Amino acid sequence: MKRSVSLVIDRTACDGRGVCSELFPERIGLDPWGYPIMDGDDIPPALLDHARRAARSCPLVALHLIETGR
View 1 (spheres, rainbow, N blue to C red):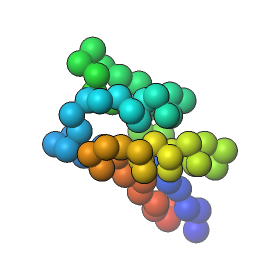
View 2: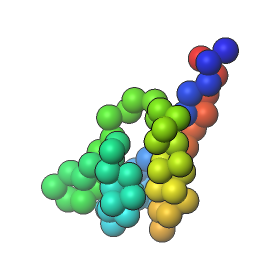
View 3: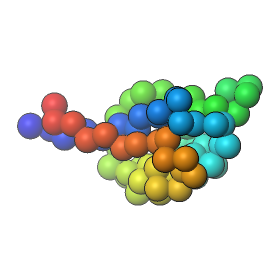
């Protein structure tokens, strides 16, 4: 079984500070109001440490890493 990791945003908790996009610009952009936009693709192993750092650094704990088995 292949395991994959993706990022999920709790949009009700996020207030658009943009910390996540500064720490993980490879996968997170910002809309005109400063809220994160993600492509929804799985995080490749080479970028997993960056994704973890972004999730840990979210001041409102609105960004989560989800691991699934596919």
